[in-house]
Image 1 (cartoon, rainbow, N blue to C red):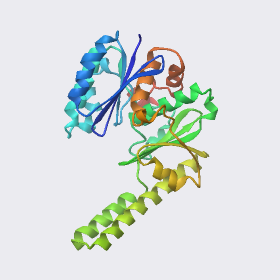
Image 2: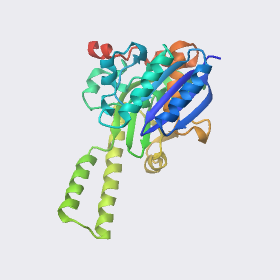
Image 3: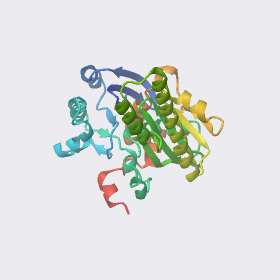
Image 4: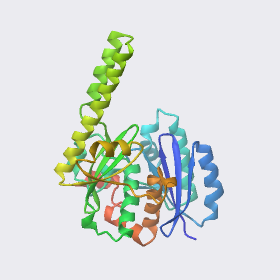
Length: 312
């Protein structure tokens, strides 16, 4: 059995998916890094030299993990350095490097050659490696449904509790994105309302409720404007959504846009989109089939640091 493994880390949770010839054969969620490491030590030796992809909620180029220097590892994990997660992610990365010479780090959006360089200047982040991996899973599903690349033009929206990510897919490639989309005016609204709270001290229940309502409306109005801007700029009409807040997003926007839910094999797989995509990415890097088709079309292998620097 040839097994490909995807490991996804986000919001303090580790998720793992294993696929064989494109079929999901195992999936797990671990709340601690020790539980994950125990699974890796116990399960991975059962498979001969598995291909493994690590997906992180950071900005990162595509990298072969065994080839990384200590300096490159530190740079890759820079976002986690002030946090307890730094030690945990470092340990997992080192273990994956030691277990398989075919272990990789998935790239974030701005490193993809399909994204014009000028768009990286517009925002501090266009989308993490987790979002790229989720798109791999989505596109692979569409290819299995015999969809052609020209048919794959839509807005991918991950509506999570902590923010919303939106990626523009055109002809089956990622061409634009917003990493953490909270509405243009929302950060300013937060600061303004926080200053009000501080200056005025304790507020009565009515005042507090009014402030919360204002924050809520600022978020959704700003979000609607941002999404409308992306859809209009790229002449896209369809939207594929996932995430804990997807039902609320659909309720707000369904009258204006054609919205589809991210395809799931079952409710048990919700939340595993990035891990599954990382496993399929691993399979596509080493084997043929529809996963390789997606990996090649997204130009994952070319999403390296040197490619970003040298891109015209």
